[in-house]
Length: 137
Image 1: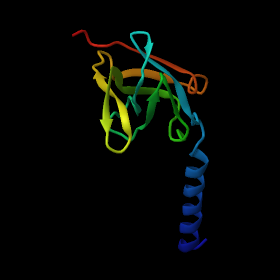
Image 2: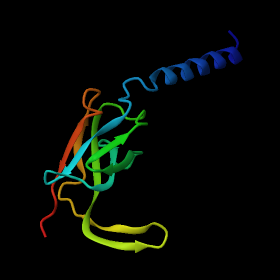
Image 3: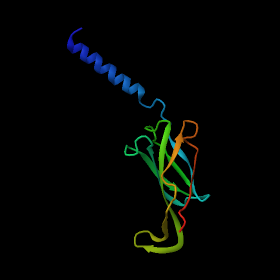
Image 4: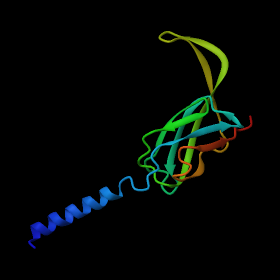
């Protein structure tokens, strides 16, 4: 086999191997419920980063009425992840937004245990139950 053909065979084999590995073991989507002190998080954001590489690329989404769903979690494989939540709650007051009209005023909740480590498996990925605790003021 010539060097040129060897190169093409090797390149094809490497690409094929990487494609076979793509998605194998991935959990698909992530979803579940997140609470603070037992109450559903009204609104906020949630993010997941590999615990072994917290500086690496993560995935995240919005929290609303205690629930989150991240439909395109194809890059998430089973394993340990650091989950970070930014939670907001309504103050019960309203303000007038020039474009949207009356909107509720929300305040940020400081969480004592965010980020926290969570084990994601193919069995629990769509039904995660995450509980957080508010910092005492």
